[in-house]
Length: 303
Figure 1 (cartoon, helix red, strand yellow):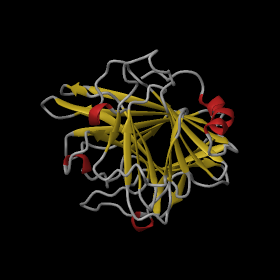
Figure 2 (figure 1 turned 180 degrees about the horizontal axis):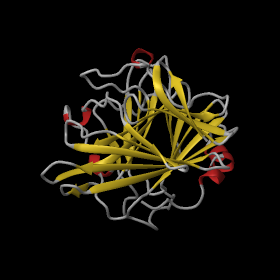
Figure 3 (figure 1 turned 90 degrees about the vertical axis):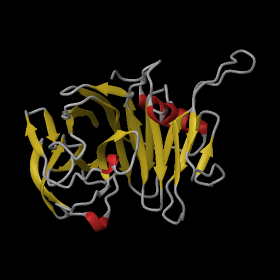
């Protein structure tokens, strides 16, 4: 299930595979998951060509792939470089990646457990406070998706007026959000955002997603992630546990844990469960209901 490989100019990468799907992580920088896809198939993650193989730079790079961050986003605190080699350990079932304390005194750890028989991966994100003081943050997991696909986020259940009078969820906009942009589809049951390499602007929206799942569809492949929603918890960015961002290069499917006060030496975890499937799914809500929703499962996973 595990072997050492080269990827994109990084010589010290690890490939996990169960014969159906595969992940590649680099230990030269990160932690970063730089590939996820069916064996012999496309990479669902985007990698930035200009930073492939680079290490040791003083400034922060995205690199692409899947990364672990912390919210709220504040420059320069959030953009601490993670350009040095990471520790890794394999116990026969789970691959653990860990970086040293970053510029903010935070230790980041990503644990990957690939199912031996199914196209599923459990991804545990952990942040440890190595400062001598307490700090408040939220774990932030960002998947940088390949060009040309579309992200799908479930709406809250429709309930007619006046049966329910309280609001259903926050929908958070950034200063550069343009709700008239044709990349958005504001459906009754789903919000969709299309990645367009020809676009010239950036888009971002956040939401509180009690359904606990999001998906990205690309060329017949569906990447589905499930994650926890904690009722009553305080989430960053005006109450978001889900965010999405796109520009001409890529699209990000982002999940966030609750805001947590970490005492010195304490840690907080955030779990995502990934599924890769082959799906022929059209753009309408009814198509998503019929072809994608059955793959999601029932209810959010635990924290």
